[in-house]
Image (tube, rainbow, N blue to C red):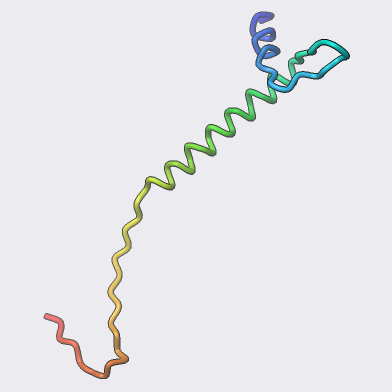
Length: 72
């Protein structure tokens, strides 16, 4: 359990600066991990929407010409 806490602490992307050294915190590691997961989910959901082609079947008849249109 202690090893997991140390790994999360090492993930802290924005450590607190105390004078001349960095202080990596557990909360900073958790925030970095959660925000990275959210960014990846948002990226892949946007990519999926971009690559998904939507086809729409629609028929529009121009009646402004005043002529009849024969449809067989």
